Image 1 (tube, rainbow, N blue to C red):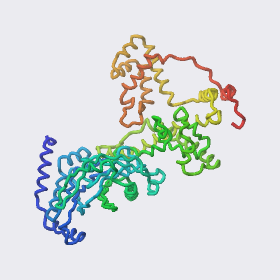
Image 2 (spheres, one colour):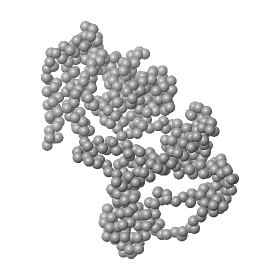
Image 3 (cartoon, rainbow, N blue to C red):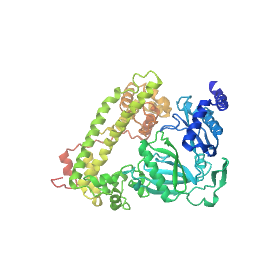
Image 4 (cartoon, rainbow, N blue to C red):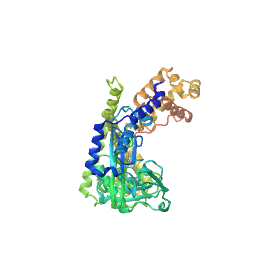
Length: 547
C-alpha cells in the first residue's frame, strides 16, 4: 500500500519544495557569490544550474540524468527558481525509486552548481574507461555540434571516438592514439538563443563529418587521463569546446557495476589474427623474458595449432624492449617454478579450510552480512587466482616437456606427442580426474541395484532423483561423499551466479543419467603401471643425458 502511494507522495514533495520561498539569507548569499565571481553584470549573463546529490554517482550505481539541470537561466530570481527545481528533483518518483531499489537513503543532501553557460561549438561526454566493457585501455568520446544536452539526453546520435591508451603507460599523453572513429548521424543540435531559450536545429549539413579534429580528440583525451590520475579511478566527464578552448563542465565516477577492468584486447595474441578466441594473457612478456617459452609452443598449448600470420616481429614490436638475457630468462623461469609451488601450497591449504569455512559468521543483520561478504570476497579472489595459476601449471609443464623432448615446435612429430602422453600417464592424484571417476562409481552402484531401479531412476525427474538415491544406503554414502568433496563445483563454476552441484543437485543428476545412458561407467581393462625408468626406455625419442 505504501509503495502504491509513492508516486503521489513524491509529486507532492516536488510541488512543496518548488513553491516554497527561499529565505532571504540564502538569496543574498547566492547574489554575493555571483557578484564575486562574475561582477555586478551577472544579471545579464546566462547560466547553467546543475543538481549534485550526495551519492548520486558512484562505481556501483549511477542516477545521472534523474535530477534537474536547468540551462539558459538569466537573472537572480530565475537562478533561485532553478535552484529550487534542482532540490525538488531529488524527490521525483524516478529518483526516489532508484535510490530505494539500490539501498540508498531516500533523504539526501542536494548541492547545486551554478555555472556560466558555455556557448559551445561542440560538446559531449567522455569516459576514461570503456562504459560497456570496463576496459581502462581506452578513452571513449561522444561528441555533437552545439550544447551537450543533445548527447546527454540521447536525442541525437553523436560521433563515437575511441582513443587507445598504452596499457604499460596509462597516464602518458604522448602514448595516446586515435583508434576507432564512428561518425554519428548528428541530425539534431541544440543551441541557446539570446533570450536563454533552447533551440533545436538541423545539423544535416555536417552530419557525415566528425565534429572533432584528431588534434582536439587527443587534447580531450589528455585532459581526461589527467583527471583519471587525479581521482584515482575512471571518470565520466562532460565537456564543451569554444574555438580552441576546452571547458570541463562536470566530472563523475564511471559506473562500472560488477564489471572487471578489461585488458587491451587487440594486443593479445589470437585477437589480432581473426580467430574466434580471446586470450587475456600478455604473451609478449612471457615469450620475451622466460626460458623454454616459445611462440609456437605457446600457440599450440593455448589454441591447439600454430598462427603463422602472427609473427615474432609483431610481438617484439609490441614488447618495445630487447629480449631478456639468457641469465634473466633463467631467473624468470625459476621465479615461475616458485610461483607454481606457491599455487600448489595455497590451494592445498584452502582445500583443508573449505569444509569448515563459513560466510558471514556471527552476522545478525543484513548490514552485518553485507560487510562480511565484502570482506570475504578477498578470500574468493585468493582462491580463484591461485587455482587458475595452479591449473595453468599443467599447461606450462606440458609446453616445457615438449620443448625438452622435441626441441623447436616446427619439428614436433606424432612420436613426440606419443612420448609426452607416456610421460603424463605417470601422473597420480590429479584432482580434476576424480570427478568423472566418482560419478562412474555412483553409476556402477546404481546398475548393481538392478535394472528396475535403474530404469526408475532414468525416468524420474532430475529434481526427485536425489530422494530416490537416498533410499539406497550404499548409493547414498557415495552421493554424500561426492557432494561433500565436489559439491562446490559445476559447469561455469567461476560465475558467481551459477549454482553449484550441492545447491542444485539436479545438474549433477543430469550428468549421472548421461553416464548411465552411454554406459561410460563400464570398467576398462587396467594397464600395468610402469616405473619412470621403464617409461623413459619405452619412449621413441632418445633423450641425451643432460635432459
